[in-house]
Each structure stands twice: as C-alpha cells, then as structure tokens.
Image (cartoon, rainbow, N blue to C red; front, top):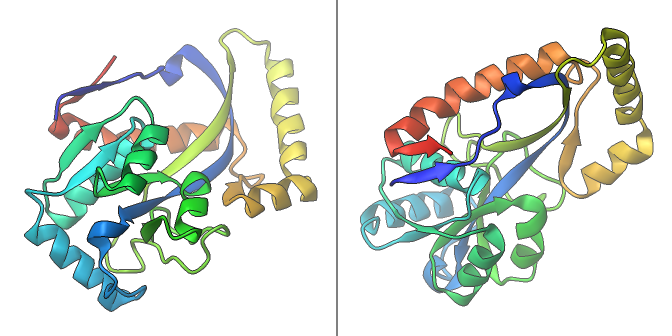
Length: 229
C-alpha cells in the first residue's frame, strides 16, 4: 500500500497533557458475516478462519488515520493481506460497509455503535484493551485471542512554543481540575471514551505516550509504505 498521512510533529508544539482515549470497533458487513457466526470465542475463530481463507477477496475500508492503523494492525496480527479501499473519511466507508460494498471497517466505537446496535453491521471486536460502554457485550480483540492488539485514539492538548512557564503550569493545573469533574467523566464514559487520570494529564505522561506510539506505529507504517505528508 502506498499512501500518505498528514502529520504535525510534536516538536513543533509545547506539550500540555493527555485529555482522553477512545477505542474503535472492527465491524463486518452482514452479507459476509453469516448468521451462524456467534458472539463468542468460537465465532471469532470462525471469523479468523474465514479471513485467512478469503484474504485475497476481502476488502477493508481505509478512511485515514485510526482506520488505516487498525487495518494494518489487523493484517499484521492475523498474518493476512487484505485489499485496502481508500476513502476521504470513515463516513462514506461506513455507508459502503452497510451497503455491502466493502467487507470490513474499523471505526470509532462512538460512531460504529449505533449501526452495530441497529443490526446494520456486525461487530467483530473492540480495538482497545478494555470494552466500551456503548458496546458492553462486544469483547476486545485481545480478549478473543489477538494478544497485544490495541488501537486507541488519544486526544491531547498542546500549546504554542514559547509559552511562559508559569502560564504553562497554570494551564496544566486547570486542565487536571477540569478532567476531575464528575459530570465530565460521566459524559465521556457514556459515549465510550475514557478521561485521562491526573497522573496521565501531565506533559511528561504525554511525552511518554507519544514516544511509545511512535515506536509502535513507525515500523508498521514504514513496512506498509505509508509516508508522512
């Protein structure tokens, strides 16, 4: 796959803190999921068998960003090579999944959940390390046997370079206070996201997260031929 991803380098900004994390959901179009496939470990094994046996024919939507990474991770974790169908965004990709034009798509759980609950597409698994509140009965990919499978979108706050240190410190403290608001925490839990803890909402924690994410995804993107734009 040859593709480009728009990347803003973290070194261009002043790090403030991690805000929240949200997992995705891998979904399959109903026409190829099969009514016999169950929502359990046996059903997931059937899916993996189907994936490997039909990898030359199956397509997976690529709406950029997280959906690209999820697709690459799925292929790496299962030893398959699927056909990536590129879109300008995941909205059209989801429409095509519902219509049966593509076979698979990984999308934000907050977006995929209504379509899964309505039976328009079939959930395969959640891409984070923990289940999401909007899809409590859908197990994670790791729970179902893909050890180490994790694709989570993190949101963080950055500031312009050169911001005075006292202002930066006040900004971090104010953000930590806001993230501790019970109503805010409850809202994001309701929509399937996890608010950062006080320990996570620091410049140092954000720096460590960025490094770990770049170490994880950098080699995979390089192997896939994905370059920065």
